[in-house]
Length: 596
Image 1 (cartoon, rainbow, N blue to C red):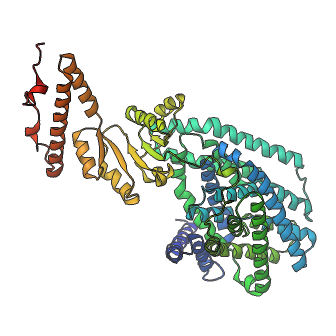
Image 2 (image 1 turned 180 degrees about the vertical axis):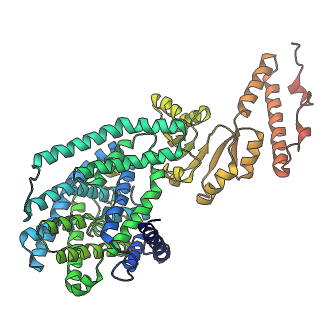
Image 3 (image 1 turned 45 degrees about the vertical axis):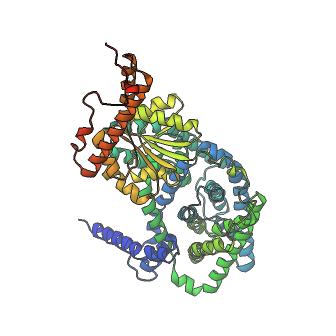
């Protein structure tokens, strides 16, 4: 093993140990996982214990957590939903970037000795927010899919779009010697070309790739293809000097309409969680406590000033776009911190000889401190501005179409049985998320206008991404005798109150499902066999009343035998209840069976 090998392994162990020790502790005291990761980074970083170094390199690598986060967000945000948010993205988002950036620029001109150029290249980045931090807080509190969360995300999305113009401003003001800089029109053409390429690949190439892999059943290859789609889009944008996160977001949006959306999200989620945790650790490591100690009064004043200014500006803008004042104030607090792209822009400003290295370190400390305070401030804001009856809290385009009158059902298996179930549920107006592993069946279903997602519906992560947390029922219509104990025990542990309805392959499978705690079990051949029996009796001239009596008696005996078998575990139990000859029923109902 090379020398780098043990060092890398030691660093990984330190990262994991710090996370395991501090994050659960912070969650236990309701301080949030993000603050736990930040504290872990400060503890193990160069400023305290010094167990790991090179925070800048770790931060650069951990930015892939933001890339994965934006990809997952894109998967959940279909084009129709994105279009509905267009006024928030390009109206509210543009106003937020400009007004917050200019307000902080003015604050810096008043409180520091920076030139206007330096104040501008620092103020504009401080006007941005942390996508990673905000989305983590929204997800922890299950607010990401709410109107509040969507409006917050709209501003974050425009901030990602604004990275290139901000880099252009820094380059235009740079005092460093320029070496054949690209004209602005060429940068714009490259940006539009890259986005068009990503749209084309995500729309027509990637779904076919995932279909081929899904048909072959190669799980590891599917995970590799999912990571390739994310990192490939990020690499394309990075090679053009654009935002990697924006590229991943576009790829995610293009796949949001594909049947592989839930499987992609489930497979990416573990990587996203680990990389985001590492990102927040790296942010904590980057905090230079010596700089903080030497300039604590200035840093404290700037942190307070930035948080107060951005809270006021964002709250005012959100209110002007129709958000209720309580929600607007919470939104202002949530988005008031500096963002991770500030580190990138500060470094560019330093290379452009606009600010000194010590100034870049100082403003980086302002960003880190503001991020560290945000979880606590947002929690306090949630308590202080709790929404009781806020008529404006759901105003705006994002609130349209959120009513769900028929409930939500997750349907696992969309073959012969599942298709019938789906049609009956749609007739009631029920929202269905259907899942199946048969890629060809999914294609056939789509031709009939039925949306079926690819994935293994027995996996907890797939069910969670399919929305089982908000489901009224979970239906298993899978063909074959799958193992109820193996599949249902973890599901019951996660969602003990969720109603489960299952299709049973045969009698033994029915017993296994009942023993696993499923009360609503339907044997797939019972009803068709009874219907055929009725047809045979009718065709040989049996009176309808007699057919009804025979069916009732058969069902009674069958249910009795099933209960005996369930209690004893012996398939021979209740064998005497099987009808082997003509039974003595009500003579008035029986009559005479005519000769064949």
